[in-house]
Image: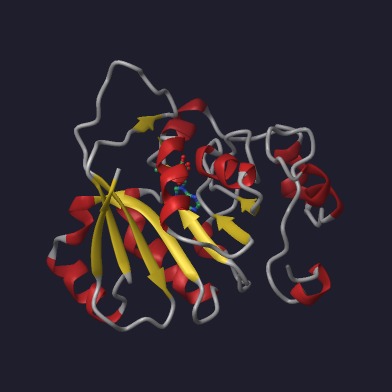
Length: 224
Ligand SMILES: C[S@@+](CC[C@H](N)C(=O)[O-])C[C@H]1O[C@@H](n2cnc3c(N)ncnc32)[C@H](O)[C@@H]1O
C-alpha cells in the first residue's frame, strides 16, 4: 500500500470525529485536514432541513449489493464515495479494509456533508464507488472520470434503464463502461434510507464499471 506522503496534491481523506463513520477510525483521525464547514458537520450542526435531507434523490443502497460488487471486481485501496448518504456503501467497503473518503451534498450524519461533488477541484488518486442521484448520473460519471488517473475505476450502482436513451448512447460512444453487471435478482434502494422488509423492488439494478481510458466494447455480465 502506498505511503500517505506520496499522496500530496491529491484530495486527502477527511476524518469525521464522533460520527458513525469508519472501521478505520485511527487512520481517519490522524489524517484530519477539515475546514470550518467540516467541523460544523462533524459536530452535527447542519443547516439542512428534513425536507432537504429527503430531497436530493436520497435512496440508500442495499449493503448486499456492495458485498456482491466486491466479489466481481478488485479496487484500489483508496475509495471516494462522493454521494455517501448515510454510508450504506462506505460501511461495507470499510468493513473490507478499504480507506473510504465519504462526502455528500447533504449532511446525513455520516462522512462529510455540505460537499457538492461538482465543486471538487482536486484529483482523486484512487477509485470511486457510489450510487449517485439518478438524474445527475451522467454528470457524476463525467466528473468522476475527470478527477481520477488513467486506469483507475469507477463503479456506479444504477438502473438497468440507464443503458437506453439517445443522449446516453452518445455518451457511451466516448465513455463506454468496461463492464455492466446486471443483477438477476432484484436488489433494493430505500427511499430516505428506510428499508421495508416485505417490499420487493420493482427496479432492475446494475453495477456499471468504467476504467478511465478504456475505449473497447462494453461487456455485459450477470450476477446475483
Ligand atoms: C441515490 S442516493 C445514494 C446514497 C448512497 N450513495 C447510497 O448508495 O446509499 C444519492 C445521494 O447523492 C447526494 N447528492 C445529490 N446531489 C449531490 C451532489 N451534487 N454532490 C454530492 N452528493 C449529492 C444526495 O444527498 C444523496 O445522499
